[in-house]
Length: 122
Image 1 (cartoon, rainbow, N blue to C red):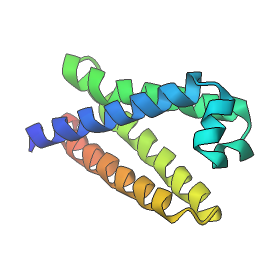
Image 2: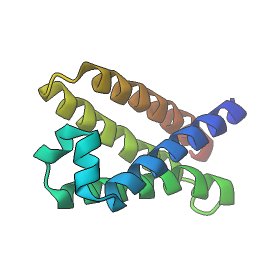
Image 3: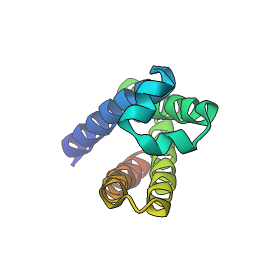
């Protein structure tokens, strides 16, 4: 179970690191061309989401890998799960069904990480 959890953590961390880097650093014109829904959000808010995604990605791996404050790993997974709930609601308001499904799947994976890692540090 530990190996599978690590695989999920690294997979989700890589996903959020990639998405977070795009949201935080890519020009807004490039982002809105790829994801038109982002045009409805303020650029500062998109950057904030990107920074949260990057920090969450680091929090998924670094504390558990180093053994320093390992309780931060389930907390980071909780934050990313909350972010995916918000993403699902945002995409639901726009009736973007494939994005809703994607957000729910990522939410479920983050929730598994929360449950498994919480048991290990509790």
